[in-house]
Image: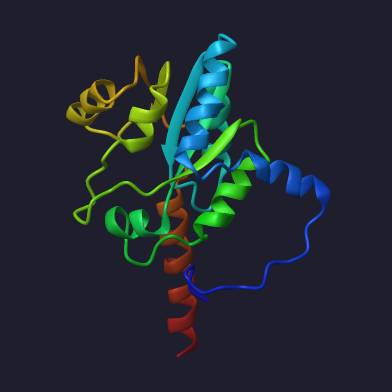
Length: 188
């Protein structure tokens, strides 16, 4: 089943419904939440990513990000965005499930990022809206020129963290494919 096919939503408990409230898709509501946090004097940390095939590196990264502020906003790349700049076969996990997964973690607000043009260039809409005190990036994710664009588009500070694990989602997919293709070829 592709990530764009619809599936019947399973019944969920009240705890899941409560945690899903962390997902805010309306950017005007995101702005309102951010305004309240600012009035309360909170230091706002923001990061974005695909969060596809969530792994230990993601967990460590989010924990490290939160150490730099009081509240953490996680932007999740849309399925369309991932197809543009990762691979047409991605994501492995649909955007709604990737967003929900982050709700179970120490993330205060989760929203969708779908502000790339057809060439895959980020338009920085969420960054301009939130203007975080700290934007967290992982090394090798953004070239120096883009770090400067992130600052120019609203981030007061950019902190680049080292990779938090040996594995990556791309490595996981590559290894799964390689191992299973080898097994299939061995059966021919």
